[in-house]
Length: 117
Image (tube, rainbow, N blue to C red; front, side, top):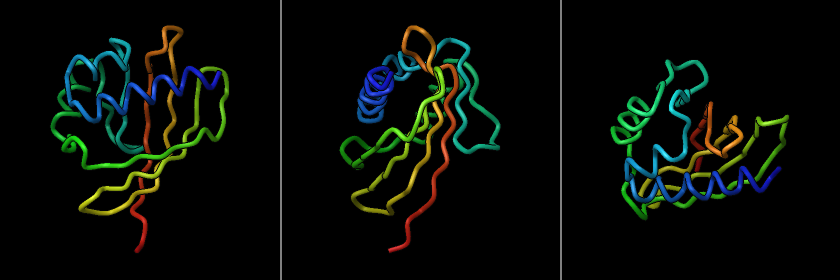
């Protein structure tokens, strides 16, 4: 149901703005897998996900993000997004998110491509 992914993305955006480890951990199951690119080695589990997130964090308020749900297959969601950095590039995004029954992500994979000006 789209409500589940909407709630998850709302919480993801909050974590994106706060960079608070508790907000980040709350998004993922304890054994979740987070891939920053489809073929990248994943960040596995809360410790690696929080560390990886904080190493690549954005400054609060530096990004606008718009998204739409492309489709769903059971607990797997396909999300198209646009990430616009106020002082930098704009990216097209594709996210594949697998949600557990409690609304946290078990798997997250993102594709991102810089838009040409």
